[in-house]
Image 1 (cartoon, helix red, strand yellow):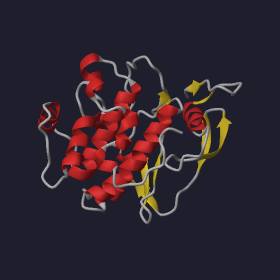
Image 2 (cartoon, one colour):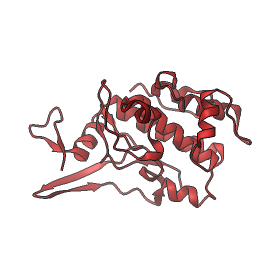
Image 3 (spheres, helix red, strand yellow):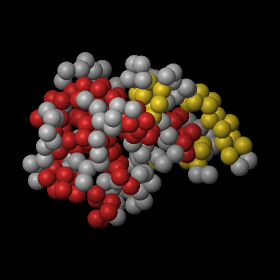
Length: 230
């Protein structure tokens, strides 16, 4: 088991416990699963997490909606996923595996919770040289340069997530080439949605939209959002 040092704790904590402890400091974040209790044992640890009602992971939710969501539903889900990602980074946590399977959705209210910090790490300013997430969400700079930074990689994963929700498939090489060239669009999607996808899935991480600015994009303007500058 991997252990990490968390400020304020005299001894190292198991990785996932430590990350959840760190991300829970400050006001409660409804978009992130809550760690209620944990217990360390000789060869394992046990976590007691909140159990949201009427929930399923976003992968199953999507499949139960014919594999694609309308923009209004996708917008409501992406707002919460983006808030969760933002707060993680604000509190020094790099989740590293934001994907359909790691987002729980309340099927009655569409409330979303980010789960499973087991692939995560402490957020660092320097580059990571090991990718522990899911291949379909891996940022392209890791495949070309062997390294990547936490915040731009998080932005990329949110781009893949949005693409899958509204297009019903993962982005293919020809999609990405058109995105890089700024000419990608998808029939039936609004111009604002297509523009946001192009901003999230830029090959060059320095050209991707800043994580803090995603929620202020035109595509989200119809929603009333709480401040992301807690």
